[in-house]
Length: 455
Image (cartoon, rainbow, N blue to C red; front, side, top):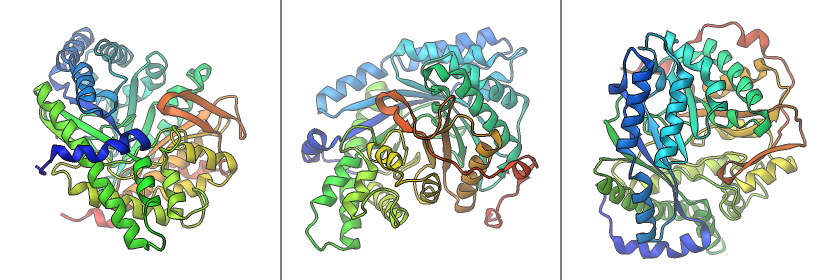
């Protein structure tokens, strides 16, 4: 474990007051494998009892620590074992019923999101996986805090194109069933390549198969802090100076998250899991990754050089953060969600940031095409092509990539969708009108790259 000097917390006071430093999430990772039963009613009872037992004090203790250290803890969340594994043993699986049980248990303990309505299908689908995927639109439409994720690809297995097409259909249907709420169902659904099992961020958090019975994973954030540190550099600072400043700042941010996370885990009587170093923006002024690009010298996010700036930022954050913790995990780097970043929203609305530029940036960021609104009449096959492209970037580069796209039903380019809070508002972006049908409907699996043979 890294040595933590609690006096260093004093250095973060201005970061908190002036630059939106916060603990973005404390996420209780909980295995539900012992909740399996042939009777779905018993499964639901077991799930409810286990979540309410382990998470009953999560929000209370997190709030206590927030007050003790004057460090905002914005979200308290739960991530559970992929539910496709839990439900498929039932004689008559009812995944929507399980979804509602998860949502109700989350409400009872007071968390703001519960993740793990998930399946891992990069190499193929079991009966349970198929049933869960088919239930996603209804499950997300009839719950409030539930989040869903499906892993469609990996660097070891390749890309499951049958599942890619199925998820494109699922995203469209989830949007349609929640069109009266600006298609929020699609905003709580994400497709992954190389999904980590210890990610504390939603909508992709779940308790991986190699994880312990229970653990506390922490996600820190601080784009505003990094931006302020860059602006404080002397005139004439070069790229090395810039990278070193980001590393130093990431170290301080991570130290804060490590301290609070370990204190909370101890208070809950559970193991500390990992700290996720990701710079997660919000719609709040000054809390923007796009703002960091401008501090680096770019006119706006989307300018030529943005991908290079993001690559340096991502790398420097990891190098600085890894020195502050012995247990770094999750996604760790910089997020570029359009709707959740005020600077990205502005860049997209002005036309400075295009869909294609965002895709290029995902080759070096922590996640991928995140919280992007597209016209509601975008064909399913085009959405499948978007997903396949992003899965390929993750597969070839041996990194995590993801797609969280919102088809804005009944709306087009120039309009927007919005949900308030951390989810923010997304301008609807233009997409390529060329057809992907002949390619995405071939089916089968795109083989893993040659570098997957590294045993």
